[in-house]
Length: 241
Ligand code: PEP
Image (tube, rainbow, N blue to C red):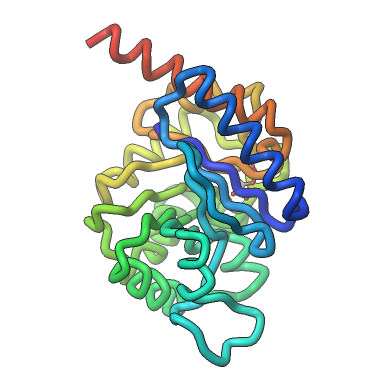
């Protein structure tokens, strides 16, 4: 399974280093073999030797150049970062990134072989317009994306569930994930108000291959517990084969 923490605009460089080191030490001690990703704030990006994979929450489709406020591969290479989050709802809806821009970014980082966590998900008004309209909306977020890309991970994150404490029912998550698996066989994460109290249930659902966690991941001990849940579930699944 894949367990990812999106730290958004939180933590200083020092705090992030402490966070990653605590997480790394937990993973090593507990023999966690699941894939653990952390997306720190830009100013906290750093090299890390260990099992935790550090990714960038964003980057421009460039090596370098005149793109004020952005970073490119020159800055990512400094820290050997080869993982990127693309299409997060906060970038789509707050920062206004269009599908066209996201596709450009996706193709640029795909060409470089980056591991791409690509986010899709519907706002509340789309959700309320019914299942068919919702799936049509989500389908538009797959347009232009190479769904067969070998280093692709998709995260389904309903916009109305992000940071709100609201989550779809387990039946809804399972049914949407099952539909989305027909669009791409890439690992499919669920994100949106996952916490220690619901992580185990979400991770146990069919067609859920992991979680992308925001607010709750800010507590390193909570995020560690979620990594452990994923390991326990995988161990159980292996026993049952
Ligand atoms: C996110 O921002 O990707 C996210 C899932 O946030 P939260 O867990 O806070 O809903």
